[in-house]
Image 1: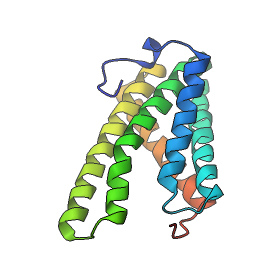
Image 2 (image 1 turned 135 degrees about the vertical axis):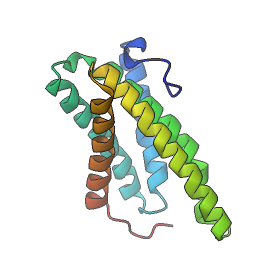
Image 3 (image 1 turned 30 degrees about the vertical axis):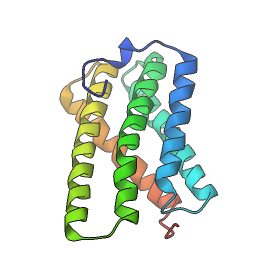
Length: 163
């Protein structure tokens, strides 16, 4: 799916796979929150992000009259979100713990930008197929999804300074 070859409907409608991807997504989201959140707040941030993934996706599918696609769409979004977060994890911690220099920051910023663009492309592909919609609606949904989750997480869990 990360290579835009498969669609969410190509995934099995499997509750165990759905549960596993949501758990993995919540855990990796929590790990990414640890440098800026303390203890339980990082874990709660990962859980909230996962609940937002479920809620926003359900709203999108409901508005398009295809709520029965929730299982496969959330499995696809959580699974690919986990993969992108896994790719971002070393870059995120590299920027936190290695010597800070202009070349290091420029390299990290470029790699993160590439990952963000790729992630939006994959989310657009998933949403476009799940919603049986145009590319434009898929992009709009992806950007709205990211903006809403970012806004809610920053509102509920403001950066504390972390480790």
